[in-house]
Image (cartoon, rainbow, N blue to C red; front, top):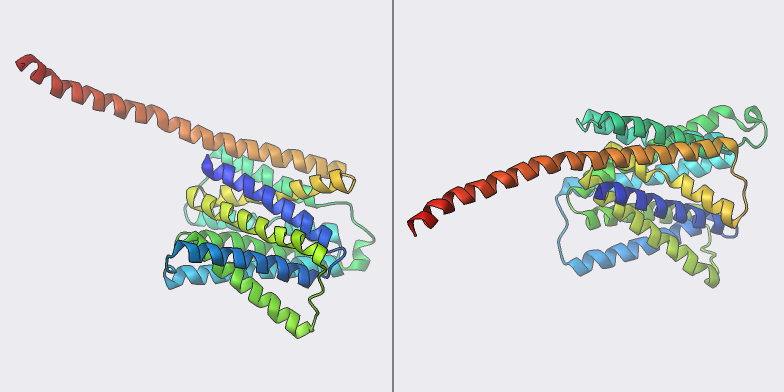
Length: 314
């Protein structure tokens, strides 16, 4: 149940950070927003790692962390490139299928969800896609349907691979895994800014919000990493991917954006899937209790049997 709670909390943090990032990007160029927010996350993670005073894990775990950072960069680059050149609703809708990657990998690794969890996963993934699939703006053919699908799939592959690689890296050491992933991401962003010769134009009043995005990213990644070590990858990744519901909800409340009927259905499916997965997880723990109670009863009986002769001889 801890894994479910952490995954849902990570989803909330991801959703808030996406909302703030999108809102800030309206007045600040995308690369500076990404560099400052990711840089803040890197500094925070560096302080955490240094304060712990523990060395890095084996090379394989660090490699997984670097792969996680690169995968996230591929996902971000493909998503924003697709949003710029294609149909936003199609790019976002296809990109929202990212949880399919960790679900497939989890099943290949033998992490089979229960039937109820499986149904919840299908509901949640479908709901995530419908929630992100807003009303198309303009003619899909004119904007490039093929490129929209291509960049959406590339984004899904990038974010899905990030979930898988972070899960593997977290088995070694979670803070080090997140630090290496964030260092890789910041390196890519710095290289991109140098190649584009883009100025770091951020006003002082905007720095706290952008820095907050970095803090939220650290919190979300940390909760997901811990959850991935406590529960099934397929379940944790899907629950951590419910962030479009949070982002759309915040946009509706603070920006007064209209939630379409299709998105309402998607949100309902997401929540239903989350309830099914959470309920199934609770049921698994509940099934353990009678067995543990029986073991405790056997232990008590054994103690009584050993004490009875001593009492009689006394």
